[in-house]
Image 1 (cartoon, rainbow, N blue to C red):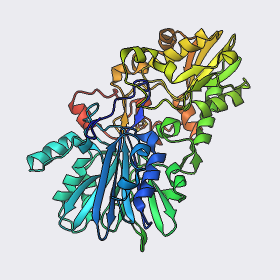
Image 2: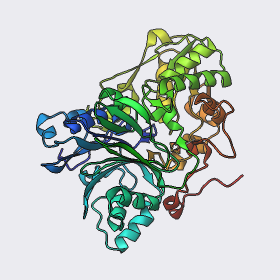
Image 3: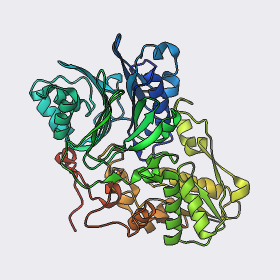
Image 4: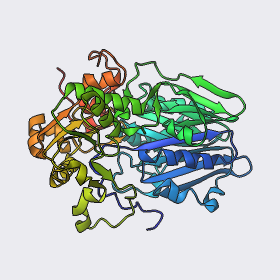
Length: 490
Ligand code: SF4
């Protein structure tokens, strides 16, 4: 495979929503790029298609490397890492971004770099710009020449057009024109910059390491470099960090009520991360507790669909009193480059990744706990495997409400008509999947599990939950232009 082509898509993992990016940056540590590589490795679950790092050294200027594939396969080579010297670096892992799905080129891999009259700047973006089509058209009409198909490049061109005299101010100008969800990590020659959109849809946290600082999509990536978690970057906050002066906090946007992505709690974030002051693992266990209270069933065994259903299954088993067991075992070494996805291998599908623990399952009424149902293709195959192994009954319990709307804020979702819950009722899904029952946690139950004891505030929701509710906190203007129909107001 040439280094300008995308690796083959994973043939067996197409039935989950996928976070599209993770961002990481450090300032004030020797060989910063090595720390960034470690951070990106810890964020690999947020994007496996490609990764990139930009560093700066006073004598060697800006340097960058972009590669397809896993961080561990690229950014561990001494030869490559020696080309990224300096005490300041940022990086990005990506799944794929809006506008270029299925045809990623190396030029689409972030961080993006721009040379301005006051010096260079590199930017890495997690999220999705919902007015990118309109911005891109306007910028091209005014003479901008785009290098990539990524919406994130708009930020660099908007910065180039700003009349401000320093890069953080130009970034403020640019981001005020941008609509959508963005957690940005950027750098100049001396500064590490972090920004979250006014609603704080996507995560970004601050860490402290020795005399330096780190910014990361999640706290699990701070742990891997030995950094201490300091706090979240607030919705609408910009932090400008230098090794000697520390963290300057700015608030360039009109304050708005936060609408953090509730799906980060359910699935995207790693269970060993902290969101706010809550452990993601503990929240997921609590989702299982709520799920057991809302959707009880007579059964002999509670099994997680590995790995993401595990904490919720533990919570479900604990609350229901039904024994917990590992009825499905995951093959941990099923990597993306395992084998070419021929038709024969495709048909083996989920069996290559998951296997049933027959001795445990046989003759039992089994509750299978999964984090979500997207197309339902994997759920159906798992049900077949469990029945083949001799289960007496199969009951699905799902740790999120029915996913019936697409996400436009940086998560890869199939078109609405491909989402099982958009076209079927719960009973229809039960019959379609051929199981004895399928039940989902309610939206209120999910809100209670993430710490909102009174459930969802329907007049002013505390989180973004658009993929469940159809209520989009930021108008998806490009998609409306393309004919997407929002839910009618009730
Ligand atoms: S639509 Fe769903 S996945 Fe997307 S940001 Fe909102 S809650 Fe998260």
